[in-house]
Length: 268
Image (cartoon, rainbow, N blue to C red; front, top):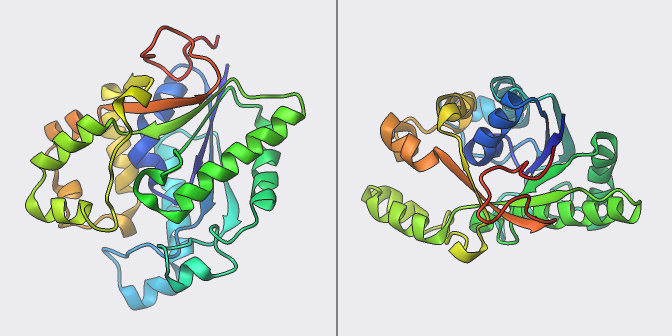
């Protein structure tokens, strides 16, 4: 049995970008460990009363994450203990409790504790751009790499580190097919350029798990805008868009000729 350890920024990130590989790892007998940096206190609120939910949104999203983790068959769920940083130049981003404001060495040391305990074969987080520029996603990249440096100095390097990826050509094609309101949203704070195709090393077929992956995202009730294109997307379109997960091998050696078709390629 090998171990997959994922470092995410907020509750719901795990279901959207990595739910398929998490379920596939479990189906193949591997251990799945999810580390989430924050409890998503600054997220938007849907399907709930804003006034009563906002003060306890971190608690709400923690419970939603636990429900999603059950669907994704997570073996261990932990938080790094930081506050959601919100977007750049906001008051939340400047909050000293936020993940963005955390000292890199302190956050990396916290994460290194879990890595030492679990000794994962494969670690997954975001690339340097944080997918769409969110400060917490970018910080997760820095913290994960710093933590891996710590355990490598200990003499226990992980076999592979992957970044989640959306091939740029696929992203461009997908945006062109979106409704106009979704295209406008993608052009604002949520702008996703995608990963240059030549950097994408690994394509994992997760069609078998796509329905449960979607169920895991639905467990994040407070984050599901009932009127969004994402929520109302037809099952066939969702499967086409999310039935394959893409990754960039950032550390370690590929376990097969590129492109790989599994994060555990070359790991027995």
